[in-house]
Length: 415
Figure 1 (cartoon, one colour):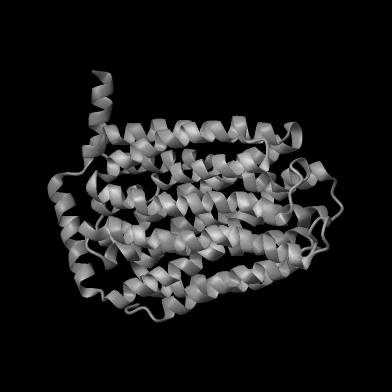
Figure 2 (tube, helix red, strand yellow):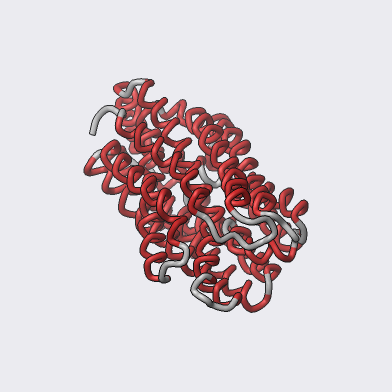
């Protein structure tokens, strides 16, 4: 009876449902950065080039890109709630498999790809559930909370991985982060148990508002949002894959020993994602008030400028690298909730799953290639067989995506 009473209380508290969904997403994302944080050590242990190291992250991103349109389509036909639950439990199993069995480059490619597939189903279905529950004027803030929880998951993943890596090795880093998706599955299940908290009349009203907005938004804006998302994903997913390795190299360039540099690098990368967490919390709400186009344009332009300069900061004092990382993380991640919210307004609710499917295959397809392309440029920029010391041109490659996103935002209608 006490359990039923607790769930009845949750049904009356929309913020409680949102909290469970966000905490579930946080737990699921704890596995996401453990490989990226471990790249400097794995290059040695697994005898990999930078290109090979990037291919593991590319496998994750490619699998995620392929799975996202499928789960989005299924969410339209089967229900977002069911897809979210099934994917969260698959994510728990996949994370544990990666932690226990990934001991070579080839095994990591396969197992991390499975992690990418499982995580797809906790992303777009969650956005669809947000769109059902929150009216347009509050939707940016709600989706911002969802994506902020992802950014906080990246921070937790880097912190756990960096600490475990420095003291016990990459195996411990993998295993410590694999606990998160299991916790996330439990929390998503709890959220599903109080899924009826929103009265049907309110959900229908929210859908009518969204349909009315979508009917006034031309297909041209949908095209621009999709292209902008491609540029955004190219920059962001390349940054996520390689930022931990870069900041570790930047820390080592200040004459720190390997273990200390690994910890410092993980925490510097964590700062980047913490800035992304702050951006997701604030920029979704800011776009509710200032307009989607204006916020997108400013953030994308700042992100592109950071891409063009970040790689050249190696050798500078740690404080300078940290400042640049914070601004970079804020700008590059800050437009994520705004792009997602704008898409929910640009199409009718009945077509949202399919629209997100198209967006996902385009954006995450580009993001899948980005880490590999970054690694190739890094190999070409440095002497073979040595630790990379020249990173500037690889980050410039990411900046092209940010510039494309800024241009698309400029041509959007409205404010």
